[in-house]
Length: 218
Image (cartoon, rainbow, N blue to C red; front, side, top):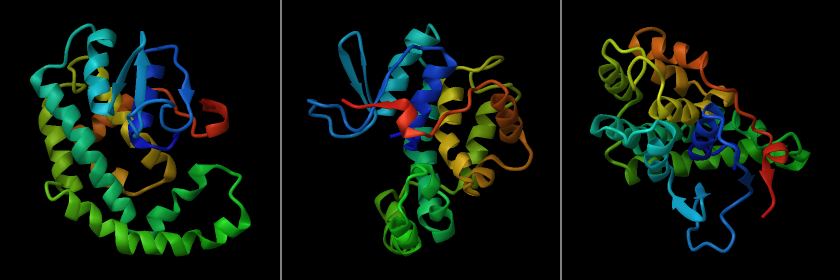
């Protein structure tokens, strides 16, 4: 799923670290795990993007995540990402921006009903994010937490980017590509997080969102 934030963060990690990988369409065939993403490394399947990043840190950065970095990755996965999704699902205009990311082959009929579907989703799904996730903070509160973690450092990992930096950027990428304003609300116009994001944008690759070019059939 090329527009899925958890999938995007893993694709960005693989591309940043120049990992040779193949991306397959849909849930893993023959697996009891019915969500995405899941990866297979040396015949071992690893499920859930948080668990995957935790496992890959030892391989790609050469060391396990520290408790502080592990807490940041957990916040990115189960807090910040859900809060961004909630913001998008809460506003019809923001949800409509995501439509073109599903490909240029959308039929005129789907294009015509998309605004109506979006309206229904914002009415029903938007508030549901907060009911199911009462722990969610505001985007400003998440910004403050990342800024506190950065302190005087250039990156979350220190003087150079690490897997948690890249993961965070990859999670944000599809929202920014869609033009969702929640990204600017999270990052801010100035301050430690905005400066971090400007530095990271010079470091990380630009992702493709064209399913035909990146996804293989299983």
